[in-house]
Image (cartoon, rainbow, N blue to C red; front, side, top):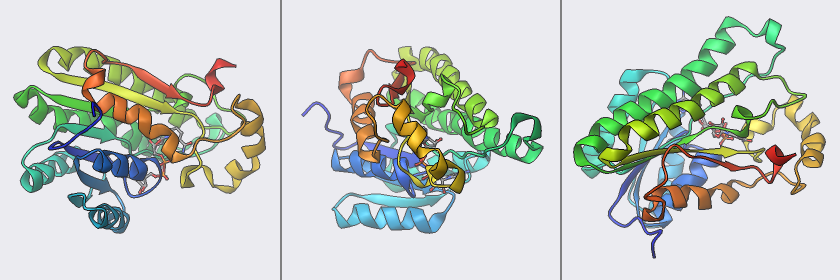
Length: 252
Ligand code: NAD
């Protein structure tokens, strides 16, 4: 099985629910030991327990990815528990909705802090170890919002942060790849998670369905194939890729 991850160690941020949780399960089922990292420690503990119940070695870690030191501590905890780190999935992200002229400084800086700075701090902390070992697979969660402007919901900070993640991925993906560390990102379209269940977003769901060629939202499970490709040896010559999985949304 060329997708097998036996003997490998992965860390997934924002893994307490939603997309990160399903990626944590998929990596564990493929054979990896998985550190489940989240700002909400109780969520991380719950997911780590789910993995352990399936016989997967797992560890819950509390992290606020917007803080560089906490990202470094997260990697140290993984190394202390499992002795190595091969896969980093930097997935934690948040969104606020507001007209751009009214977007507050707090909304802007927190979105950038988590979605952009957080991904960078995690990439740095993970790569420091991976570059020493000459092997690593880093996958960042961007969004189709990096490429298109979502409407009618307004999310200037989110869109800008995700565009930054895509270009950061290309930059790091070309800088580290000749030392064994690839960096790629996934860009989901609309996925049925808590992130999309605010009152505002429930109102625009019908519009999303109509605008998506597949006429449905993604289920979290729809994304794991792309992640397993990027973590496997089958993606050995792939770096800096933005793998869009959007049911065709960005084609229209
Ligand atoms: P979610 O809100 O269901 O889960 C996100 C998790 O991240 C939560 O458990 C939360 O506690 C955690 N988190 C938030 N801030 C954090 C921080 N500072 N440090 C560590 N953990 C933190 O969201 P989701 O839908 O699963 O989204 C996961 C990723 O996918 C995000 O980056 C999001 O932007 C991206 N994405 C989501 C969609 C979608 O439609 N749901 C589409 C494209 C991209």
